[in-house]
Structures are given as C-alpha cells and as structure tokens.
Length: 155
Image (cartoon, rainbow, N blue to C red; front, side, top):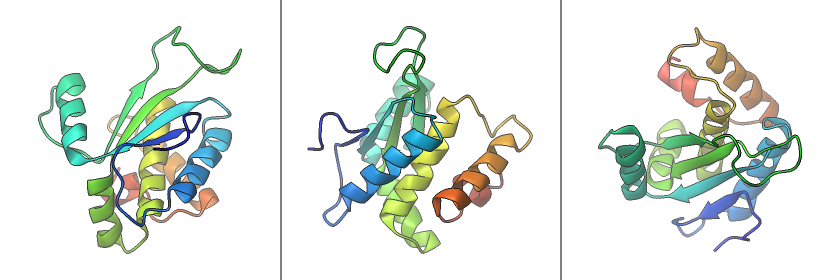
C-alpha cells in the first residue's frame, strides 16, 4: 500500500512497477499542472475501471483513464486551493499501451494522469477544437513524457 498522504493509491500494480517514479510524476503534475491543487489518482485494473465507467458514466466497458471532478465544497486542500478531484487509471490498459507505443509503464501512467488532470481542470478534447490536445502536447514536452493520449487518438 502507498503512503496515505500520497497523491497516488496503488490498488493493483504489477511487480516491477516503480511506484516512487509514478509518485514523483504525480507530485510534479500537482505542482505544475494542477498549480498546487491536490488530486487523488487510483491505479487499479480493468475490472474496477469498467465498474466505475458503468456506475458513473453508464458505459459498460473498461477504459484507460477516468476523471471525477470534485464537487463544490469537497473537503481537503488549502484555502484558495481546493482539491481538483480524482483520477482512476487501469494499469492493465496502461501496460498494453506502453508496450504498443514503446515506452515504460511509468511513462504511460504519467501520460494518463496528465490527461485525466487536464479533464479535472475543465478541458474536454471531444468538443474544445483542439485546446486540450495542444495543452497536453505542451505539458508532455515540458514533463519529458512521450506522445500524449490526444496526439495518439487524433484529438
């Protein structure tokens, strides 16, 4: 189990995953992309992502990343820096995508976490005319991450 004060909760993680590297990526995302606002990232498996997707979005399928913005008044954070919300990542999908795109699992989790975090900040690549894709590409380069999710999917 990870540190209870960590941004990342590892419910399911393969042997060999560098959890500390994932937590360092999350901390950098919190500082820079989230502008110091806290968020929680759950790293779990396909079954849990499918359950969450079905329960909250009505889609009975697994996916790689889901974002759940914090409702107004959600506890936590600091004055002027309320929590952004929660992200759930399927380590099963992340592992397959990392192999497919030729980079590490930790980098893929970082890409998915960045994507989810941009959604928590209010961006939506399905209807924003490329705004999120451009932001994701800028952040990816700044953070040293490989091709972003929106770049791979065409927006």
